[in-house]
Length: 240
Image (cartoon, rainbow, N blue to C red; front, side):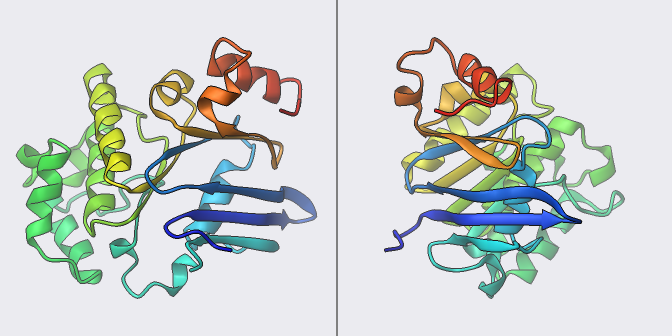
């Protein structure tokens, strides 16, 4: 039975030119919890997220929000907020204009723009052009865009990339608050220390297969750090 407000990855496989990118991937991200999706470069994280967000199709299996595919939502940003593959806007366009266009396309009230910019501490950049933003500011804008529709689901790919130490601290507090509000949070990252500080559950993928899943404290029960878990599973190809 499908659980309410759960991201469900079920028996997901992907082949490309005879190469097996994903092999029978299954896991779930639950409401009110932060699920970290971990793995080395080329493990299949981005491929999984692309399928989940309707940017690619699987060879087999499903990736759904509740029991719905992303492409079936009439106004997807009202259901799913994602920060994935950069800002995706015209460099000469102003931040406020960028957000207005996105809000209009998803039937989102314009007053949400000032609210989300305030929430990510970017109000002072409202009239700046996208091309002038730093990497960290771009990350914050991506998060603001994800929040526009006040969605149930949040999917972030490398959300702390480019953030300074204060920005990383801010993100920890921000993402915890979102989960505490009952949001379903799935985030992919290479920053294991940061993941260990915020995650409730983890999924480790290596060579297209899930090699570990579970609550963070259970996975760490007999190992000192998440970094130890990560390298023991991905370097040795182990199973946990």
